[in-house]
Length: 262
Image (tube, rainbow, N blue to C red; front, side):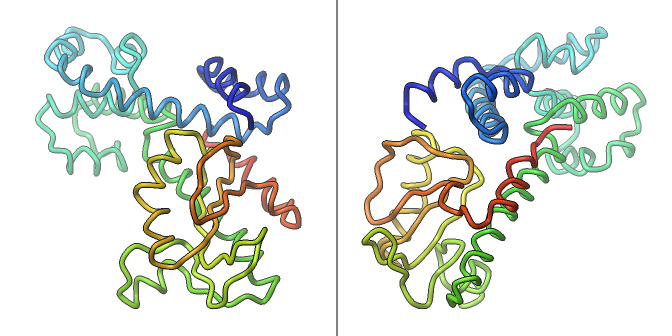
């Protein structure tokens, strides 16, 4: 995707209703736009987190005087799950206890808190345990497509888990036992990302992972399943998206239709 189109879409995306209308307008898969929206919400939340928590006493007072968690989340433009976490902290729950109760909210003893936390988790498509679980499943689906693609070519490889069992440190998702020549590069490793490759995500993972993979394993390939900007910098590795895996059309379609939305 060119940078101009991406930034137009990014600025117009506010909720899941926008995803479907913009998908038709810009002729982009719904899964791509849903992923861009997800990353936008996460990024904005990261920037607002400290500001919101600096007002936790005020928010807790509002809650005690009858303002529901969902109302506070909406009024302060903060994800419902994180607002619920803030309220539970002020109620005396540790982070560990809160995380456990988010997985089993029926175990929350206080009736009002239990009811509001359940509603908050159900309304949160980005930070709730269910949303995180679905995002993890999308990551696994992307890796499964690469595994099928490699197996179809009868290429031998080690997975991330197998490499870790050998005691290796930083490991990509797949390391090929013999390099595969793609577009003039000898690809030794493949990293799967169930993301849209924008400037922010790519810079983050280049510093955290890709540069190290190149230094350790040589040339490789990064797959951004939900697309990427055309002009991302890459040194020592290729950048591809879903279109590279044309023969796995059915699996890619299933991945794109697997929205973190209910």
